[in-house]
Amino acid sequence: MTPGPRYEAVKQYVRERILSGEWPRDTRIPSENALGPMLGVSRLTVNRAFKELAEEGHLRKVPGVGTFVAENKPRFGLTSIESIATEIEARGLRWTTEVLSLGPRPCPPEPAAALGLAEGVMVTASLILHRGDGLPIQLEERHLRPGYAPDYGAQDFSRSTSFDYLARVGLVTEMEQAVTAILPSPEAARLLEIGPQEPCLLLRRRTFRHEEPTTFSLLTQPASRFELAGRYRMQALR
Image (cartoon, rainbow, N blue to C red; front, side, top):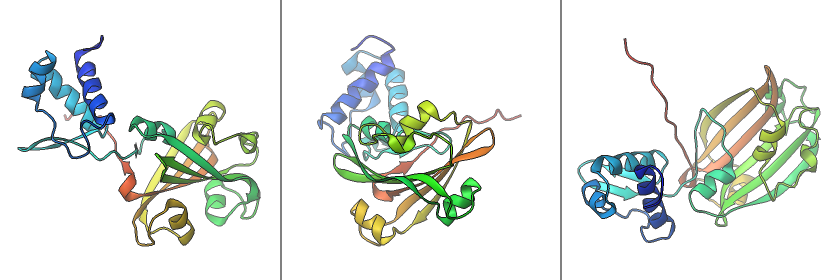
């Protein structure tokens, strides 16, 4: 067992076996009662570790049956912004990316409306394909308000994500997201290497700086390779 909280050591033990392939997807893992004595910890400690691993997407519990290794999908929460590279690598996959386009372009109708601009105004935009172990995970289309992050078009997004760059320089104060289930356009299906009838999740994301829209992004991902999840603290009932 490694130093630190015992439940964290249990989580590390489980993650290592998942990432090494010793416990592949859909494997039924040892129960809380069995794993506790194996690791020298209480059942309650294992229960907490399993609960957090399930919330993180590594495990799934089937009541009355057992605990299984979950499908290894990258995931986003709806109330936070995360780097797609971080999400892919957290699942033990190798993140790579392909910059399909980057630079000035006339703003299409939907991004223009979201940014409060006239259609056709020149903006900096990018189209980037993110992969996990070579498999396309997300197609990212991003448009920036003129004057916002002016060096965006000069960055090398094959080495780090556009999210990471904007997190350093963007000074975002708010974010909103909406999710729609769609069928991919022919071009998106080609880039994502999926069939024309495979369902996708489309995230529309807009960021703000002091009430002014700064970026508008369209994030398309095959539903079979990606998931949305969240954990929320409820107000106490009175």
